[in-house]
Amino acid sequence: MSDWPQGWTGDRNDRYGRGSGSSEAEGARAMPQVRRPAPGAGGPPTQEPPLPPSMSPRGRVPQQHPSPGYDDYDAYDDGYNTGQVYGGGRGGPGDGAPGPARPRNWKRRITIGLVTFLVLLLAVGIGTYFWADSKLRREVDLSKVEDRPEGGKGTNYLIVGSDSREGLSAEQKKKLHTGSAEGRRTDSMILLHVGDNGSTMISLPRDSYVTIPAFTGSKTGNRIPQSQNKLNASYSSEGPSLLVRTVEYNTGLKIDHYAEIGFDGFAKLVDGVGGVEIDIPQDMKEKNSGTDFKKGKQTLDGQQALAFVRQRYGLAGGDLDRTKNQQKFLSALANKAASPSTLLNPFTLYPTMGAGLDNLVVDKDMSLWDVKDMFFAMKSVSGGDGKQMNMPISNPGLSTPKGSAVQWDMPKVKELVSQLKNDEKVTVSSGN
Image (spheres, rainbow, N blue to C red):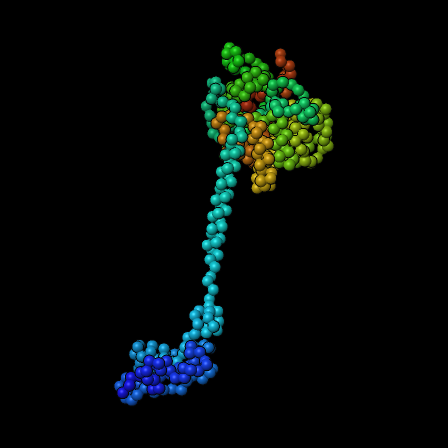
């Protein structure tokens, strides 16, 4: 008996089924379903009629259910010989529906984009740091200061505003009302202490009558004996190094860092941040400084700000009131310079940093991070997290051989210095 299903022959040319000459494609015609006899049953295989058109291979493939008692081989064979012909490949014409699209890996794309952004941000940050650090004018060598006191807790900055006209043209000097004096003198001096109990800003009146310790002249090499004079005279004689020595000698407080800015740098810094809003405490008008303000809040540009911090004539407290105005404005300036609107805006940040750092003279050991800490400390004072005061005064109009001067209240000064050295909360008042 032939092993071929009924209707098939062993002829090679006929083994693909009858009617091969039909106009319908081979892959689209239904082949007769052939059932093998159950194991143990006799008789030839039976042929079942072809599938109806509704179950054409062009439609879905019906699910096959193996008959009970069939082994795995027969169940598989039975399902495969239903006469179904699978046309096309994935998404081909014989499938009836497009194949599944390859999913887009959005997570991978987002990760790559985020890493790229962080790398660029890091590169810009590092480049900005080295650019800014290179602009600092490290011209003061505190290691040359003689007889220095021991350091305490916290960090002490001596911040000086000088009347240097360096870089100013004749027209700019006239516009800023700076005069044309040669050399440089201190126009303001502020001792800033930064510690765990907040920051403290202490103004040192430039007419403070103090002891200028003995020193060796940098030009002559001669030893200059100790003398009594105004604090500003120490700066005029030997510059920052003797000023630091004089402050340390009269307070016993070690100065960790020194920072100085001149007229031109100060005005440019204010203009760089787009002006600074300040509450003018009273009507101010004075020709020497160029002030002409009405009482109340207003935004000052660089020229106006310089006039505001320099005025001393016409104020009830003279130089003491001027130091209060200087502290008030410096705190407002630091608050504006360290605000998100400045730090996060490159069109404001870079001009501000360029203007400030180009004109900032600091000690050789002062880093850009120290400058940042100094500005943020001044900002914190303006926000109420700290204290602003003058050096305690016992006599604001002391008559001396050098003219009228300011005398410190030494018992209070010693108490204040003790609190600063131990980084305690300052309870001493200025008394003026």
